[in-house]
Image: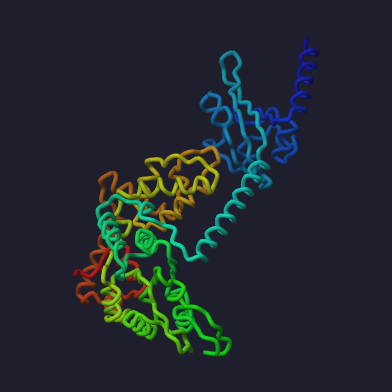
Length: 470
């Protein structure tokens, strides 16, 4: 009888070693009892290396919480068709579709059996398709940018908080006119999106929208870019249209206006007053039929006080002033923005994320977002890189590690406790606000009194929403 059982056992082992799926059987201690040839091929291991070894030793990247075999041992419940990503002891990355089942003998759990199908090559092909799709997307974006078009409209601007809605209402009114508009707000609040939306809602929507970041180009180069050059004006100079000519009949958006050299500010003012533009080295003037929209990433009053912006140019360009609120003042908009980014990124990553968990959302709302909406978008994109292909919810563990430091603050707020990090944050804010008022809202003097760099103080002012009173 024992010989017959041995023959049957050998027979089934041969069958399991010929099938095209991996089979892994562990006992109640998590040690490997059976491991077929296909499973060894998938994992890149020898059967002799695996038999008798504990699975958590074989797969260091797995834990009792993430291993499907361990889950089945703990719960006694089967896990059908589960996608798993792990690394074996040699560091090889593996992706499989697993079906895992508990094994009972007379009602007693004696181990777990896993059947695995290797999908690593399929996932690699999927990643290659995504890369190609991303390259096509970038090429299309570059093509649109070269055409000088504005892609965003008011329907793309998301938010229902009162500060955001107030700014949106004013922006929609300005689209009916051709008056200069100055948009201010911290970095990442969407100033160019507002500028494009104003352009697309106005009578110039079918004309060019040209954007230029004044901080991105040195002053000696920016002059030629802005006003154009005539052949022979200087060595190597050729006939080239400037921004005013390129945007003729449309809109010229100048971002980070406070970074524009004072000399160029004077020349820009002259063009705005006369309505005529002349290329560098040229003799002919052309009419500058352009609507000007500018943006500042600081309070305009501060830019004027620090001498970063000419008063006469400011008055000329700030016929309408729109102030965009930082994300810290738009807490109720965060869930809307998160859902927007999820919908936007799903087709790019080839995923089907449907929601974000309450714990993850609490983490996001507790964070102060110094980078505002742009930083929130990057955080969601980072989470997309962390989720598995079969997951449909962004969990707290998927969020960037940089947000982890805010967990204590979030727990303190949710639990109603005034913990040390929050108290220190409040004390710092009050100390900066007092010193700022004491020094007449002068950033340089305040930074000197507090013993910190001017750039660091500017960051803190934006972070805490401290501005000069009207």
